Amino acid sequence: MRLKVIVPPASEPVSLQEMCAYLRLDCDEEQSLIGQLIKAARQYCEDFQHRAYLRQTLELVDRPMNNILELPRSENLQEVLSVSNATLNNVGYTVVQDLLARLCFTAEKNNVTVRYVTGVEDAAGVDEQVKLAIRMLVAHWFENRTAVSFGNTIPREVPLAVKALLEPGRIITL
Image (cartoon, rainbow, N blue to C red; front, side, top):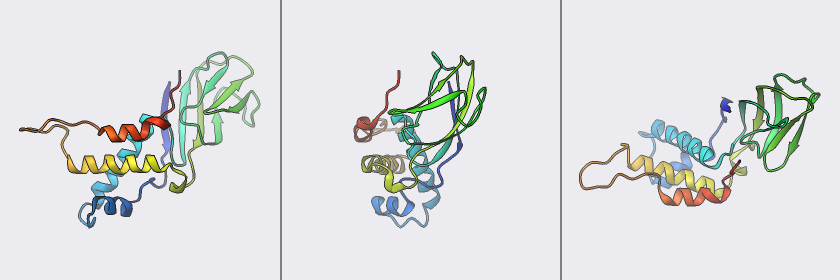
C-alpha cells in the first residue's frame, strides 16, 4: 500500500494566533517556525490516529483483497475523484461508507490507484482534543528544539499527554 497527499489542507486545525496565545508569545519573530511546527504536529497527529482532519486530496495505490479496497483516512470521505482500472461514475465499483470508506469492485483487480477527497471543511469540525494535542506537541517542540538533550537532562519523546489525547480517536485497521 502506498498513500500520499496530493493536495494538502488549505489551513490548519490550530491557527498561528491561537498557538501564539497558547505559548504566551508575541509571535512576530517566531512566526515561520511556529507555522512549520503546527503543520508538522498536525501531520504527526493524523499519522498517529490514521485520520485526515481537514479537507485534502489523497492518492492510494494498493491491491484490493477479495475485490474490496479500504480507503485509509476516509472517515469523512467527500468524493472519489478517480479510480484506475475501473470506469468512472461508479461503474465497475461501488462506494460503501462504514467507519472508513471501501470500494467494492465488480471484478477482480490488480493494483488500483484511487484519488479521493477526505476531511472536514474547516477547523470547527476538528475534535477539541485533537487541537489540544496539536498545541501541546507544538509547545513541546518549541521548547525542545533539538532531537537529543545533553548534560544532566534526559532525552524526551512525544509527551504522554499528547498520546493520551489522541488514543481514543485512533483508527486501527487490520
